[in-house]
Length: 486
Picture 1: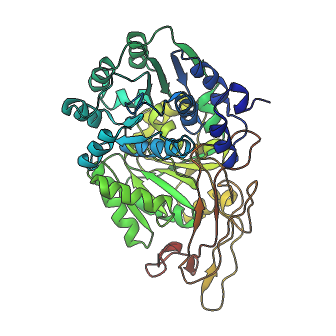
Picture 2 (picture 1 turned 60 degrees about the horizontal axis):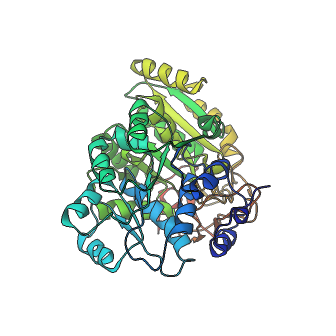
Picture 3 (picture 1 turned 180 degrees about the vertical axis):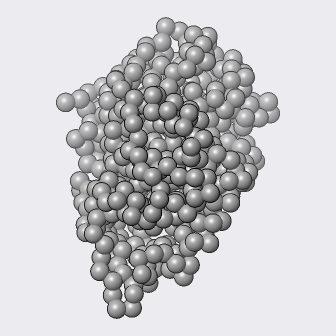
């Protein structure tokens, strides 16, 4: 059995991993880390949720020099949310290396604060293309000492139109560098980028990467009309009662309108899209991670950026137009070997997009026609289980157990999304509970960003009690589906 310490990684980093219950690497880590430790260029094709962030962060942290304050490693990401999450993970490792500093540089954040941090020195810089170019033009960021360059989610970066910016940044990095390209898919533009800027890269592919994620997710198709879609979604949310769910819309306007409708229906929801200020986006994501929100209505800008443990359901309110977008959306659940449910709504005019997706994933989605309420009840039989009996006042207790589906943070405590929700569901070392109460509760969380090594303990657990109230089996405006009162 492979372990991290046999690769000669700094003992303090290995101890940090062990403190989070990570003793053995995931497949992508096992394949990539030994190659990256040698300093070779590498193209790593790995689905999100497989532990790829640690696959490049661990070799970087092992090589950084604390006695040199200049930027020695640069990680470029397509979205602010992903930059924030990688930075949080990097800082967990950096805590074990005295003198190592990490800086996140992304739009919407206080530029002056970033300038001060850069002036004081940061060996590892993580950022989005636009803000990195801004610092380079100001002269506040100099890449002359960079020896390690990571292009994370390269396919999404190019899909979002960042090719020119990424190439501008790469040209400012010394040619005597190690280049690491990570991508969930390998379209032609990514291959061209690799040929132009990498030197004899090692090609690392985890067999059937897409299937690793898809096989852990129950995929359901709900056939309905555009007019009936909103009602069908609300019915399914009430029936499935997700712990945390992401709902994807095609446009910012549709996301805002749907979020308003969900809030009016009594759900604890909020929206995430490009029109929000950075402070608002961070506020929304913080509330979602802390489970103060139950539902997050998002556009595709968040498809790669959301890495939150506990996401049990993904709803494709608007069907994605290509296979990659579908895979990246539903990959927000069923992470790191956990279970999840993905429900896609489709009207008759979506048939071509649906067939394209099913051909791309080589499987048929489980069909359900939205005709009557019994449909939703039958669909959620695997995820709902038996309900707790109602008390005389009409208030019932939320079933115990919850899903802890960390992506690269790993560790899972609680119920499986496609398993039982009534009663108690146990993780490998911990147990999540919901207690009966007035709708107020608190959650203690211990997070690890690293994912879980095979055979290791969960590195992430939630403990404590969180109460949800309900009346007559449905969430109302006064009881908020279990998150009112926070």
